[in-house]
Image 1 (cartoon, rainbow over the protein chains, first blue to last red):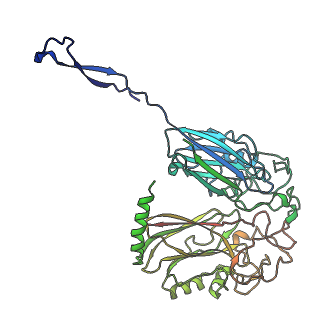
Image 2 (cartoon, chains in turn purple, brown; image 1 turned 180 degrees about the horizontal axis):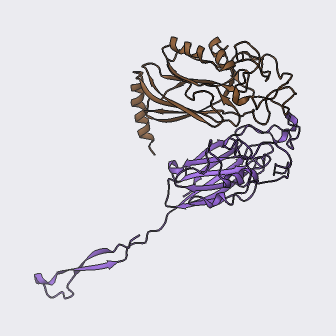
Amino acid sequence: MKSIKNYQKALLIAFPLALSACDDDDTREVIVEVEVPAPEVVPVDVSYDVTVTNLTNGQPVSPPAVVLHTEGTLWALGDVATVSLERIAEVGDSAEFLTQGAVSAGGSGPITPGDSQTISITIQDITNAKMTIAAMLGNTNDAFSGLSAWDLSQLEVGDSWTTNSPAYDAGTEKNTETAETVPGPAGNGEGFNPTRDDTGFISMHPGVVSVDDGLTNSTLTVEHKFDNPVIRIQVTRTE
Amino acid sequence: MKRINILSAATLLALASQQSLAADITVEVQNLTHGLYFTPIAAAAHTADVSLFKVGETASTELQMMAEGGSLDGITTIASAASADMISNPAGGLLAPTMKASADLMTADDNVMLSVVAMILPSNDGFVGLDNWEIPTEAGTYTVYLNAYDAGTEANDELRGSGAPSMPGMPVPPPLEPLLGTGGSGVAGADTNATVHIHRGNIGDDSLTDGKSDVDNTVHRWLNPVAKVTVTVR
């Protein structure tokens, strides 16, 4: 920003010190112009606490990636997943996803079923940013949940907003559910694989089948099945 | 916050809506699923005393035609008889997974309710539905998420078969032809609930040549919601 000089006018009134003289000329007005520096524009922090709760029975949720951005979407149903989203959906690695947007914050670790985690994120001066969240359901091939470009302008300081999010399918890896392809503890298999062999588009997730429900080669059991919604997201604007 | 403005606007609109004015809207339907196709979509604006289907009630034969075979002939008949304004087949055929289709609709006075139906494939008598959603009178964009329903008119055997009403099995149009198995023994008999109800989902199996179902259990299952309807009111 350009430095703008402010001029402040000070009106100084000099009173006569001598009490003895009582002529009209004894009181004089003097106008003095004083140059003062422009006030520094201090950036205002706009902060949010994002609490993610795992609603599933047996799906660890990978450390959520929270990104604030000012335009567009980082993922959307019907779109082709970016590689950075694929890395979250296939192995829970959010490092690349978090390089996007104006500011970002990642979770501290996986969220186990029933557990919650709060992530704080701060952006300066902007109150109408969009919030995008993504986190993997660990015992799947490429399921994730989150939020896409939610408009934060409706939150005043102290306001909270809560939503329940469904499971999405990144469309980048077939839902074979084999131990070799499920990176979570139910499989300990391969994580990210750049080869794409599924629909190619982000969609709602059809759910996991599991060996108990007719998929012979699945490493998953009925413990890992889920229904929508799979996570709860609470956003609170703190400053 | 704009609460006061919204309230006062709502009051004005409530007054305006009593006049049941004609509306200029766009209806967009997106298939949210991973592996289901929608048959030609019908979206109708109609009066409040008409329904294309009602949960908990027996499906009409016209709805049955749509839910078992994807035909809009019966739905069109109902809509015409009710002087409804109808969008028919905006996708020009099947709506593939995650794809969208939309069309504009000028609604006549008193046609203040919107209903949407389309069969889901593969299924015996599954359909995506919106029943009597009141079209907002305030200009804006509105989003509704839809669930999958079972018409309750046909056994969910999940076997290749017919799309004709009251004939068993699932119709299998070209895009599904290479994806479905054969030789299944049949999953289920007649529905316990013979009224329109929330679909229990496909079971499927992991064999393309035998097993109980001709449906692929890793591709053709779903979790609700299955469709997103975006209505723009001008």
